Each structure stands twice: as structure tokens, then as C-alpha cells.
Amino acid sequence: MRSTFSNLDLQRLETSLEDVLTAQLRREASTLGLRMRPAQLRSLSRSLLGSTGLQSSGSKVEAETASTANHEEEFEPHDYLHLVPQEIRRSLGQYMTPRPIARHILQAAGYRDEREILTRALCDPACGSGVFLVEAVRILLRALRRAGIPVEEWYSEVQARLVGIDVDPIACLYSRFNLNMLLAPALLAWLAAHPGALPEPLSIHQRNTLESLAGEIGEGRLPGLRDSDLPLTGVFDFVVGNPPYRKLGRMPAELRKAFSASIYGHPNAYGMFLHAGIQMLRPGGRLGFIVPRSMLSGLYFQNLRRLIEEETWIEEISVLSDRKRVFSQVLQGTMILVFRKRDPGQSAGSEKQPVRTAVIRSVSELEGNGPPHVLVGADQVVRRLNGTTVWFVSERERTYSLLDKILARHPLLGDLALGCPAKTGPIVWNRVKPLLRPKGGTGTLPLVWATDIGRFQFVLGTAGDSRPAFLVDNQETGHLATYGPSLLVQRVTADEQARRIVASLATFRAHPRYFVENHLNVLQPSNWSKVDLRFLLGILSSDVVEFLFRAMNGNTQVSATEINLLPIPRGKFESEIAEIVTDLENAVSAERKHLEQELNERVARAYGISRTDLSSLQRSLRETAAFLEPQGDA
Image (cartoon, rainbow, N blue to C red):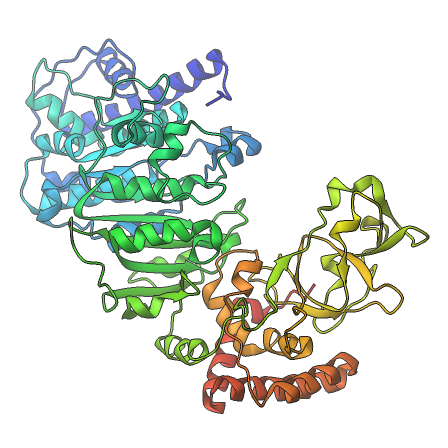
């Protein structure tokens, strides 16, 4: 990591943290009746934060273990990310986890204040400031208290049971600081019980988890990787945390090989941390992460999903629907994922294995008993479509029965028999920027941007000069032109919008050829296909497909891959649906509501869905935050 601090800054930071920790130790020593010299406390603080030169002598402590309980519950971990420039945080994928999320993940993973955890090991492989470790320590201390373990043994128990790892040395410093602030009473009790002895530092390690693990499981050794005194493979009962969210560029061949089972295309750090977590767990161990929802569907995470399905039992997927209020600088939606590692040789017959699913609308819902969960079979969540799996998540049991009806018996849009697969628009505007023109003329063709596509409406040049509506047709661009009518679908939409699928037909009477920018998906029937584009437009624009897509999609991308996984009901309703779409394209605003409801009823009948079921899914759509505060279609 390229440090964001100078040596002088680091010295000042370390001194400041030493001052705070020393003051806390002084207060706790006074409360516990200990006599310790200021120099002893300063040396102890320096040692705990990673320095050297600790010299201390303890004295007898006589205090009830319950006297530390208020300190444990009230302590709030200090974060350092406000010191790091935003561009550096983004490059490292670093974001502070709200305490209720960390607490919920630990609870969901089975890390509770019971005697069983006194023999279990927990690791946060990207610990940051130690939010998850602080919450784990609170739980462990409660378990120690309930088990009657003397307070002077608590520090050693924490040291033996909890491990934190982070590539960022400043994160490790803050993690040590937070944990030692929380453990101050237990640490002083340990010192009092071991006169003249020095406590071993907490198990917080500054290293790259992925590279360290690859060095253990891979055949080749990564250049420059030191021998590890911290084995990672198969040694933990719990792996928890908030791994970094960032795409990884070029990386050593040994690293790519070690994680090849989960990588497809451009790897993302959080996907590799999920793979690493599986390797770090003992059989029967549990992982609990908060990760982007992008892995629910889509091509790039198909290998990761398969690995998780084959190696673990999925136990919980809880979607956080309000992405802006969880991590203010994170654009992706997030979710909580909990799974349990299978025993070696255990069969993959997990279809009826129960999975908890939920939709969490705010972090405050995680207080108390948390949001209501639905308990359904794994086969209701993990569904195989066209050779790959998609994970569907809902807070209602009825949703899963509706999905059964929508997905049953109908060919997928990408099937060869339908002959109209979706593909990404071929024009990347910044690669042809010198050839963009604000007005048409000889040697140019229209260029369609995503902003030109509305719901049933296509208007060229809606963005004005910021997105020029024409592109030079020459040897460089000519082979990228689209010929004839097409159905265009916006590729970038968000949960906050009233519609995730925004589509319309594009036709040019004067230009049989035109260009389509790559923030659009293009659907065109093959020469032999009989499918009507207006029929497909009606299907994709219906509430049924909107409901289905929101249940399967986890990000702001409406990818061609996901569109091709949508079931398309063929049969007697095709012409009727196409006629309604024609009416919608020409309707005034006063007529649209009635026509859209008529469209939804015809589409529902085509899928074999009753009016009652249609009303149920429409009610579900209206109750989402997006439909309460629609942001428009474009």
C-alpha cells in the first residue's frame, strides 16, 4: 500500500493514540485499586500499539468482573478513515461498517455469548479499524463472564481466540488501539495476576490475506512473500467482516491460479475474499460478510456462486435496500451473506436446506431482533437458468411461489429457439469522441444514447450537445452500425428509480443504419425469428418482469446476460400484447394508466398468473422505497 502519511504524521498519530490509551489505563487502574507509575502505563500503551520497551510490575486487584460490563457495552470504536483521502479509500475499497451490521452478522453466523465459543477461533481477514473484532470481543467477554472465568484470564482468551488481518498498517494500528481500549480492565487484571510478566500483543497482523493464503494453497510461491507464522487454511470456526470492494487489475499468476475456481473475467476483491473465507474455515465453520449485491446474478460471478453452492450451505441472504444510508460513498447495493462450510465429501444435495432471506430497509431495523426473515428451501433461492445459477432474495414467502409460476415452462429470452438475444450496444463513446457530431450530414449516422430511451418512447438527441446525436460513418465505425428496427433497453438503472427495465423501439425511416451506444442493450430478431419486437417490449415493460428482475438483480447494471435469462411466454397472447404496446406508444398521458394495467393483465395471463397473484406482486412493487419516491424512468 502507498502510505498516505509521512513519517512525522505517523509519529504524531501513534503518540496521540498512546496518550488516549494511557489515559484510559490510568482511569481503569484507579477504579480497580491498582498502583501503576505513569511511565509504566506509557510503556504498556506503546507496547500494545506495536512499539517495544514495555516494563511493568503489577499489583493485586480485587474487583468483581461485572464492574467492567458497562465499559464494554458503551465503548465505541474509533475510526481512522476520515484521515484518508477519499480517492485512496476508494482505491483500497475501505468503508466503515455500522455497528448494528457487524452485530447482526456475528449473531447470524452463530457467534453468541455461549460456552461453545470459548473453544472457537474467529478471524476478520480485512479488519480495518476493528469494528467486527470489537463486537466479537464484547460477545466473548460476556461468554467468559457467564462461564465464571476469572477476569485476569480474559485478555489471554481474547488473544488466543480472535485474529485480525489488514494490508493497511494504519488500520492495524487503530484496530489494536480499539481492542486494547475495550480490554483495558481485563488487561490490567492480567498484569496484576502476573507480576513482572509482559502480555503478548493481540493477534492483529499487517499483511495481505489473499497473498498469504495463496502462498499456502498454491503450488508456486508469490515473489517477496515472507514465511507466515499465522497459518490460515482450515483453522477458523468463524470468518466475518466487510471485505474491500474494488476491481483488481493485473495480479501475479500464482494469485490468479490459487483463486481460479471463483474468478471469471475481471476479478473483484470481495469475491476473492469470499473464496479465501471458504479456505480459511474448518468444516462446519461459518462465514458472515457484508458484500455488494452484484454477485446475485450476472456472468462475472457465476464461478463464485458455483463455488459457494458446492462448498457450503447458504444460511442467510439479507439485502440492504437503502444503499445510500449504509455506506455513503458506495454506489453498489449491499447484502449480508452467511454460509456454513460443508464437511469433506458431503454431497451437494442442499435443495431443501433452509435459507433465511430478508430485505433490510435501514440499519435501524437491525436493532433488537432485526427485520423479519423468510425461511425457504435453498432451491427457492438458488435457481438454475440456462446453465448458470441466479440467487433470488425476497422478504415474503409468497414471492417464491410467484417466481415458481413465472419461471416455469417458458423459454428464456436468450434461447436459440426464440432468435432474439440481447447484446450490448457496440459504441464506446470516448473511443470515438473525435468523430461525434452535434448535427447530421453527409457521412454521418444517428447515434442513440441511453438518455434517448424512455418507457415506450424514443426521442433522438434528448441530451443536447453533451451527447452529440450523430457519429461519422467510416472505416473505423461502419462495422459497428446497427441495421433495421431494434428494441433498446437501458443498461444502467438503480433501485431508486421507478423502473429497473426502461425500454423502447428504435426505428429510423431515413436511416436504415444507425449507431447504438454501449449503455444500451440491443435486441434484434434473427432472419428466421418470428418474434414481434413490440411483444417483447410489452413483456419486458410489464410489472411481472419488473418484479422478477428486482428479485434477481443485485446492482445498477441491467446486463444483456440477465436480460437473456428472462422467461418469455409464447402463445396466443403475443399479438394482443403487441397491439397494446402500439397503443401505449401513441397514447396521451391520460390514457397510459389504463393501457398499462391492461398490458399487465395480458402479460400475467400469458405467464399463467391469476389476478390475485398479479395484485400481490404489484402491491409488493408499490411498497418498495423506489415506488414510494419514484425518480423517473430515464
